[in-house]
Image (tube, rainbow over all chains, first blue to last red; front, side, top):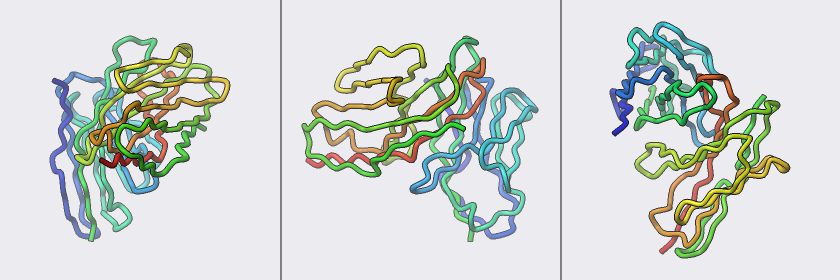
Length: 116
Length: 117
């Protein structure tokens, strides 16, 4: 059974703290993604990675960074958390198998982050 | 730039009614992929269907069916004989072809479907 896991379901941090959100997938997927979900806005792409140590900015990368040191793990970092980063954060992965297609993404359960 | 519009923010129907969720997309690419995901109250997104831009055949899976029309840039989702368990937020999403699926998805804002018993 495919699995994407995220380190916390709920997290409360203070403004200015450095925050790490961890994501692990056990499907040997090459590609991994971080989205944030806000009411009325849907999901928006923050960063993605297509290989170890590789990263690409998504639509809303400001205030975030990422790290991918191992294939199975993709971390989202909030260098100095702010209240406008209070949100649901979703990690996803997909495989590069079949170069002529775009394979569906598998999502983790999400981390609801509150920044006070 | 890509865009996905789900004009229906919330739909409420009584159980056993049929319901259609609309999705309209914009893209300049000739090759692209469309998806539907379901997000139940538990929060985890569940993949429902993928369709590429060259395959306009409609698809049926049990009570679910999808109508893809390139001429109107629409990819609508119909649930027949709805059930309370269908209550969820449904997202339509789009991605262009990038040889390896390493681009993120562009999501619509979602439609909250409420099925009343």
